[in-house]
Amino acid sequence: MRKIFVPLPTIGSFVLLAAFSMGSVAQAESTPETICAVPVCDIAAYLTALREAPNAQREQKILKDFPTFLQDNRKTTDLAVWQNLAELGEKVQELSIQLGDPDYILREAANMIDVSMLGLFRFGPTTSENLFEAFSKISSSGRRYEALSFWDKLEREQSLEVVEVVVDFAIKAEALARKIDDPEWIIAKARQLATTGSTRIAALDPIVEGQYKIRLLKDPNFAELCGDMDSVDTLIVANWMTSEGLVATLMSRRLGMHKAYFKNLLVSEGATRIRGQALSQGTSSRITLKLDKDTGDIRGSFSSTRTGCTYRLEGTRKHSPGLYLRDGALELPEKPTLKSVTGIYQAVLVPDSVEGSKPKMLEGRFIIRSHEQPNGSVLAASFVRKDFTQDFQYGYLVSPRGFMVFNSGSGEQTLVRWDMAFRPDDQGVWAWRGQMFSLFNGVTGQVVLKKVSELGSDDEE
Image (cartoon, rainbow, N blue to C red; front, side, top):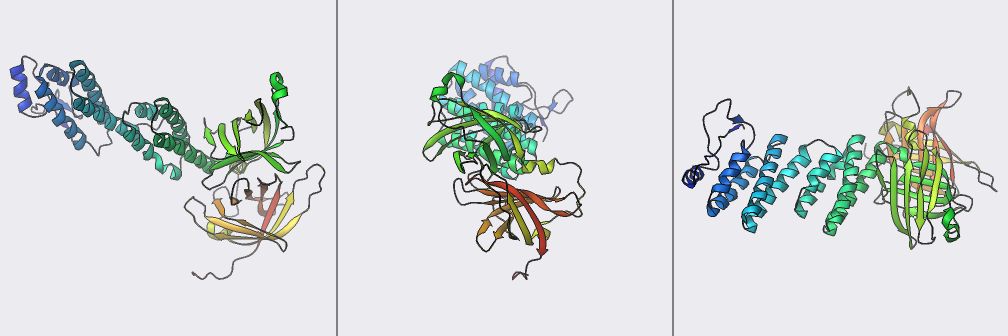
């Protein structure tokens, strides 16, 4: 609703008292000069009236006006209104400090600022700068928690750009919360928002996920302090689709073992920076990575309590499910759906060769069923052979680009991942073709699925 205001008179306390007795702000008939669409059109005049009023009258006016302003505008999405109220709160707070007003008046002004900043946070532009500026001006820890909670919807956000912005903001918010000694529940909320967003980034564009051929280089200045990490040759990054979020492991495929494991990784700076710290098997470790999404080159550092130096990490991408979004023009015979991908497949798994070993082709049946879960997983599957079975509890389908991802695991470092896309071979034969890897022993390989049968009758049909 448009509001009409004129400046309060400023010539003597008698006139001021009369103006206060007539209402929160004097009104006049609508004219082009006095029409505005914000609660207080002339903040300077409002402040002058407050300054020249007796203390009791000033306090009464603030205690009456400020809750009214907030109540009247509680549902607005108009940025001009929230900017106006924020400016009013800040100016009145400054004035009250100068005049030595009691604490409850200062709290009223602070609440005006906090609520206004929440409005700017929620309805302003979704940029890291705007979110952080509004957040940093909120004085109440409860209101800061409210601001962070506004983005609980992030795990359902469909815009990759928005998620990346919010993650960058959340990382800054956590740092600020630590700096000002916020309660741990604020710090934890900001960290949760960052990790949830990082997982969402991987879901919308899994280019950070995959297998990387790497090597760890000792710091030449402290080589004698470095441990034995020479055998590490593989980095694996994956969205586990569980509470562990985005995970990574440093593997020695030659030894068939992992050297470090990280969960709830943070992905920021447009999904080019990856970092994490963890206690894995009692060892405190840190990893920081910088990824070139186009070339797949990866650089970074690794350190742990088992070594006295920081290793430099360098490598390149061997495979990522994100490449299925980038493998050129695609004309699918038909777009796969949750219903069409369920069924029974003939599956072939060919492990990659490792020094000193000969790969053995494994054949079996791969059975896919729909199974929707709160974490966004919509598929489940099993790879079945006479000698063993691998169950996949989590899976999803990206229909427009024709690819699926399946995860199997029940705890730290047990993840087995199959990801595949519906693509033709050189002879034009279409099938589901992709990769597998294991965080358990570092085995990687190629998979091919060809559908041989639909499922039997469903008891829900």
